[in-house]
Image (cartoon, rainbow, N blue to C red; front, side, top):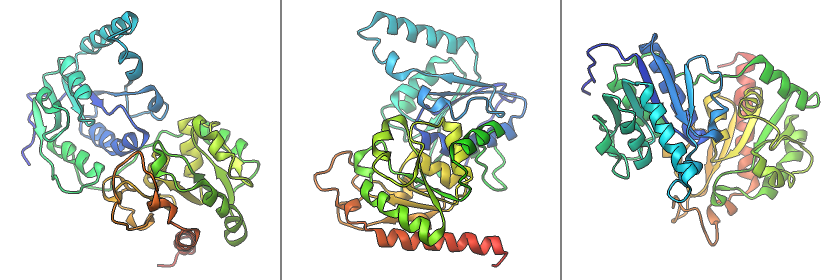
Length: 352
């Protein structure tokens, strides 16, 4: 791969990856590589309000720039929103970034990269919605099935980052976050985190099956159940009796602190699942309409359960039958849980 050359090292870098939570998690290794490569640079990250909490106060970042996508999207019919968008763009330009990295790869993100006025703007050669026309440098990637993180790493490689060594996912979780989570757990020290929500209804394993896991998790594995998720998932979480319901009660950093201490995480294809995978927690994740090769837990294929049917993966947000997840019964999930717990037990005993 041809390296991108700079007359002098970039001093002000903007990383564009606005959403969603899983995508932000996938971008954390790039942040770590950038900080190592350009130790003295001012590094900013542009993202949406829903994701900003995960990066607030991050020691590797100099700045978090919040992009209010939904408000600015109303600019064509609301003068106040249009004025806000114009002011936002002006402020971006005033920051005088000399390197912008667009990992979102859509028309909006490509346009924002161009509007910064940065002399070097990098993105994917096969980005969607005409985004590549806004870049000065286009990184070619394999068009075959490839995980998002592997695509992002190609950009870091083109920038000359040192690709040796283990991949880092530098979460910013503080002792205060951990203490606040401990206070919510009612003294529970060994627990499984259940994450029944997703942003697509078609990616949701039936909630009654999550509920059916509570008793065997307690009786067979000695784990209390903690149900977590966003405020929009409180009602869903209430359908899982017998556990501690923290849905809607944690910040993103507190959610990361909760997952960090978990003995086990059971989740659909969702942002919090990627937090668990990145933290290397014991994990069981249930896939239906999406492809775990592209968006599964990175290098954790053995943590995935799915039913291999002709129409999956379909990448559809709507489905008349949702067989790919409704046909996934509880017993295979319990078997994978048992295997994950055995691995942890062996690690704890020092066995190989």
